[in-house]
Image (cartoon, rainbow, N blue to C red; front, side, top):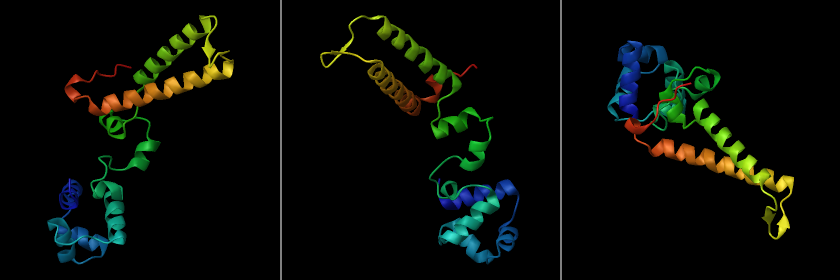
Length: 159
């Protein structure tokens, strides 16, 4: 979405007219109207004023993110699934699944005798490094798969 349509939407959510909002921001109504029509772009200071007025981030105003206020989002632990998907965050179900798989792999590796790395028996530190790399890879794969899986095929998170 572009800045003009975002501004119109946010102003409508607040139930304000262009005149009321421009007075609140101490800017000319015509200037604000030009922002909503796309004829003018607000400067950085005005963008910050608008963001503060609507309680959103400047990135949201500019259409760089779909999360209105990431700072508020981070401090609130009751997130909606849509917001988690927008930030590309793993759910608790994903975390449990990764933890289970890593523990299975660790158990399998420790039960094996003679695990070798470069012709030498694998040390405990080497095993931990391998497991850390696997865990990182699994997390990345989960995030990427979430990003490209159409919503209708996504499994619901039943915690």
